[in-house]
Image 1 (cartoon, rainbow, N blue to C red):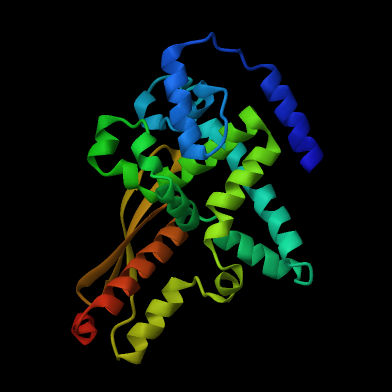
Image 2: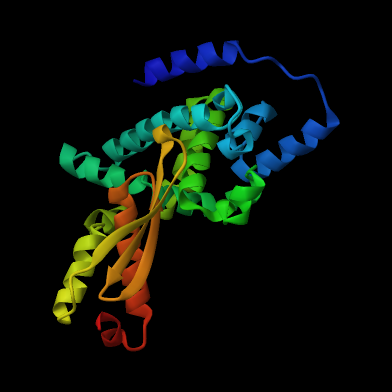
Length: 263
């Protein structure tokens, strides 16, 4: 797989047009060097990686200018880098363990967390409408931009640079042994929390759907009784429900009198 990734990189880099020297681009290049910690070269790639599709709503061919294609590529590079890292890190563990741990490292929550560690939201180019509703801290938008940034690094500097970035920004931030033991089924955890207190069973309600049909975003609320306790936003209903359950658990665990919330 590494061979084909390298071949793809060579082909894509071959069609990139070199930009003429420009002092404005030089300043921007320095900003991207600070963001990534790497000697970036092709500034327009990084500009595109941080450009959300909302800027081109309704315009034909908008995918050529937003970060959607780079996100697609970055997702593939990220999956390979994490899989290879875990394969080397855990030489005696089976495929099921490696698959479950990889899923915890490349999901929306983990990628949005990594994006926030870089303050990536401050670099995003969004429509005014999306900015108005908090798009710069939207987990789905942040996760997509983080993947797109990996795609840009891969095209600009190669697989090893992308690997170094992922290992430093994402993988090094986790205790992998502890992460492997952690349950991520927040719906089950919230159900157990409610049942232990004799509360009604949690229920989940889709309150909004956003985006085009091929890139839908779901907003889901978690309820117990007549109280709305958490909200989740994700690209699938299932994941949005898990995010809502996680938010509800965090809210209840921080409450002074959680027994009051199941009434």
